[in-house]
Length: 335
Image 1 (cartoon, one colour):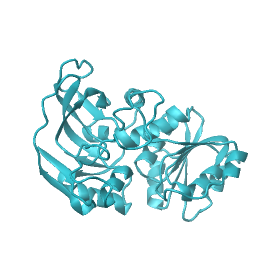
Image 2 (image 1 turned 90 degrees about the horizontal axis):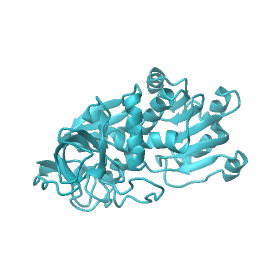
Image 3 (image 1 turned 60 degrees about the vertical axis):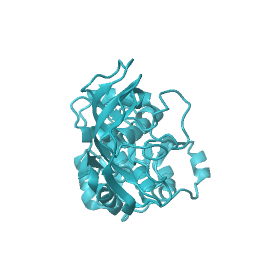
């Protein structure tokens, strides 16, 4: 079979496609999956692009979707021919014992899905949404589940809420689609007027160009009649958090997801306290969260926005496209 590994010391120039041995037949509790697609996330980009982030020979990519080719003894949840999608934290099946690092995340601490076949525990997968392509399903593992957990699990979104989303990456677009499907009003930001128009087409009720309106938090407050938004899907980090606090109503939920603007900075803690807002960090979710998410997707009229798809041999080019910032929605890899 074919697979991509990263050679030391890392960097996109050291991603290499090569032949590899087929995986072993599934043992008790295991399944063999023909991987058909993956999708790119900022996490994948960081671990592949930064020299020294991955050990020599690591197989990248956290997201993997495909069909079951064989099942081992004792597997009852899946059958040959089922379409499945990987989970981000394979050891976090459910409950509140949350991982705090990526030591057991595929494509980072352990080998990922930039390969044609895997034999792994059945519990490392869920089924894919009914009728979804493998590329669509591959967007669930990281970006989709992050948006779902931020809105449905942690924030408890309800019809009539107002949600702020920042930018046009995979998590933000998923959050827009989910929020609209659940009856919320959405205010979205981007630095591109063309992308803002696309956000409107996807259902955004209000859009703000954050370059021409740098005080976009105050603008969101104005757009809500001075009340502020109920939920902020905060993907920027330190450079945007202060504006997210301004945008939020008293008691707002701010889901801190991303570090696109850095890993540290000043937080206006007095303002956060005065507004009695809840700032909650999160990293994707558990397998139970994903099972609930897939069940919801089967009931919702929603499909992910895919910007472009690359072949497995073009993985480095796919990351360079991501690096350019020109994409809108998810970038996929067909395997």
